[in-house]
Image 1 (cartoon, rainbow, N blue to C red):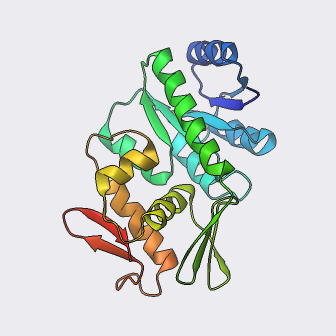
Image 2 (image 1 turned 30 degrees about the vertical axis):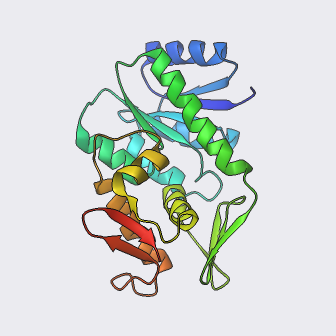
Length: 228
């Protein structure tokens, strides 16, 4: 399999449990016990996926994720957040920052392995595509995860890129917020749709000439969004 996974967690028994089970599935596993060391290791090893706990020393998981998503070299790295806090606002915050999935401790090892496999599968499908979608003066390079407008490269997060991609591939079709949640985050997130609205708002600021008067992404009130 040769996929590299980095575990960033300060609970040694959790780390050992994850390391044992992931290694037995053929993954190459490395660990870090605090946020700063975790970020440094991400930049060094360029993992295929990161399991990132929120409550860790030095800098917490949210701050680590923000640093990852703003770092050009590793910003597209898939990240699954881990935490003992089963609170909705933590989940929303993690997803809005750019987490690919979220799992609450205590968790089933089988469920975690299934989520790891699902996130890697989605990421690899996207990475292997080698075509381009053009909408007006916007070009979406699906191979290199790049978007340009009028020849100028736009700095999109991974989730913003995926939102634009799915809207472009379904141009003219109304996509509901729940469908967007399911397709981009890979599972139904309890009907929580605010994270989609936040990402759409950020995306509009980057691709629209006037984000208050959008030319590309149209809001269909009470339903979702479509690309004109």
